Amino acid sequence: MVDKDKQESSGASPAKPSSGGGSKPRMIAIEEAFATREFLDHLLKSAASSPYEGVRYAAMVMSRPAVADRLTSIDVRLADMDAHGVDMHVVALSSPGVQVFEPKFATALATKVNDELAGWKRKYPKRFACLAAIAPQDPKAAAEEIDRAIGDLGLNGIIINSHTNGEFLDDPKFWPILEAAVKHRAAIYLHPTFPSPAMVKPYERYGMHGAVWGFAAECGLHAMRMVLGGVFDHFPELQIVLGHGAEGLPYWFYRMDLVHTATMAFASQPPGMVHLKRKPSEYVKSNIHLATSGMCWDDVLLFGIKAMGVERVMFAIDYPYESSKVAADFIRNAPLSEKDRALVLSGNAERLFKIAT
Ligand code: MN
Image (tube, rainbow, N blue to C red):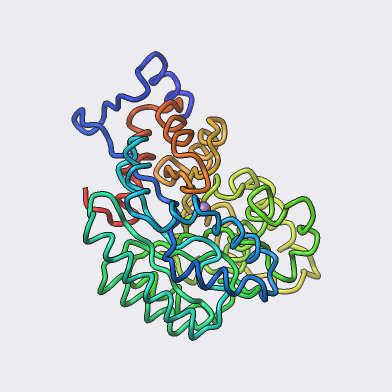
């Protein structure tokens, strides 16, 4: 399929899609960070006393005036989008979100963040779709906020910035959140954060807790805990999005299936093994989607499409941390058929996030 796509697109103008009756597909970028001033202020205030090095790191990055403006200002964002031909951002509260705050405060702040996002959508319905922030620290309150943010405010999905105080979504205590997501048919964007306290020590040198490696290691671990913990047997309709080339999961399909099958056959199994109805990779292919954020590399895109299916691959920039120009140029020029490019640019996102066409 990928080879055929390559042939179809060879020699064709990469920026001129031919599907959809000749109309150019919108460019929707689906992992675009945002923050309110109140969130930033609180993150900066709490950074010094936080037990997490990652909070200090995030606060340091986000406190730079240029980054803070790009996170908080609609006008700065729209100018960047217009300059690079990006039609729509799917906007979500920047990592680590409210997940590092005390539960009551975090729940209240998530509500205010979602109210602000609903305002962005109302003002610019063609430019913004929005993912709801929640505080998994209080799973019941988080499920209620999903009811409100998706059901009442009409937001398009949910952002969870990976682990919450070192706990993961395979823990049944969080399942009211997953139930609410399924009820509203709302996809959860499982976005990286710095490694959890039990994991972080060896990552604290060389800046490894960040996006160079630690983010993918931690978020990939989180997704694998959900797969191997049987979360998708329990919630077969649950849909998760992973950025950055699905944090490397497709690359591991062969080995994860081989070793999981072999381990299940051991007479004495490692603790916590769960009998799964299907092979691990099959859940990735039916319950997880891949975004191209921060991974502007043709070979990874083509392999992701081959491994996951083109209907599970979506364009993302990772504004304001990555270059909109680099990402937009990458996807416009990637060796895809125009039909596949249209799906990656907007068709898949419109379907998953219920974005009006
Ligand atoms: Mn991101």
